[in-house]
Length: 88
Image (cartoon, rainbow, N blue to C red; front, side, top):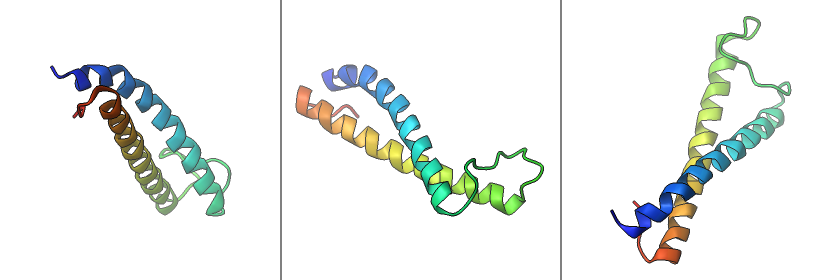
């Protein structure tokens, strides 16, 4: 196994947790900016419409994917700078 991959394992785990927290905070702010209540609807929220639930899920998924990709890429780049090899 390459040195970069070994060095990236603990970094990747930590970055995964951080990216989840960042994505959650970004989604909450986005949902508020769109003029909705403070909390996004859950899929089992009986009083919310299908449209609202699916829109919220789509936005949340897109934000999570973008934040995760940005954090993973930054972590891989930092690992290459430290070890000289790409972790992927």
